[in-house]
Length: 332
Image 1 (spheres, one colour):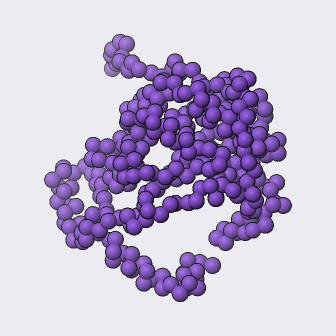
Image 2: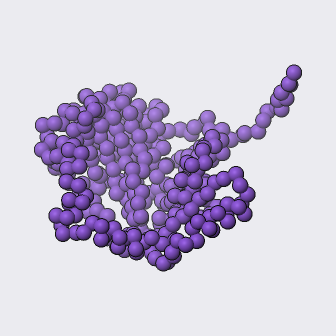
Image 3: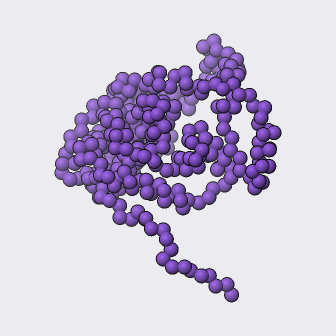
């Protein structure tokens, strides 16, 4: 059942629709171009002008202008009533929980694009030291082997932010206990407030990594730059995705307010779930099942007992990069 056959069954002429899309959106104002070369700028500009000046400019809005901010990306509370169980080809056990977090406006999207407030929450959830979520679930309970938080998707009108957890066989059996611990930790973050240093530490580390990162190849550089040009101002074409500018407590609170049990989407992957897999995905024939989601009720016991803690300041973040002494290399 291919794209061609599927559209044909719906009485859609795929080629005609493709040409219509091309005719409407193939426009210079929707394109970016990055060039890297050893030649001088005048020469590079001359070549670019000769090769690309004929690209038409219809000054059209992007495709997402027709729906972004106008049509809700998903009915989150309705979607959260069901959970997916997926049978993998390889032997693995994991659970992913994610939240759909819409942009409220163009200004909100731009502010969050530069600030990236989700890194504060990701740093807290992904911490691995004493009192961390991972330490509790792995070392004390033996339910997980790895855990991390990140943005899963970032599109025109929303992001999905989530937590990926690799489970032990016992962790799969006690998955609800694992999920309850995650929400206990989120409640701890909300109730105890996030310390000021957690707003500055990710910023400092990002600046250090960017400053001392290795230079990549020209092909990768222009590919990345051309993509960044769609989103960032010219002075941030290179640094924009790597640095965090202007994270506010309000932005972080807004994300946390939306990360509730009532809005979470849950997907579990394990071969042991085969008896629950009553459906087959049409493209890759993956087996899966859809069941009512278990209601998650945070208890707060782990936090009250001191088993979950907000990390202390990181004393190993470098701040002074000056040379302590000059080293002269003697060539014999």
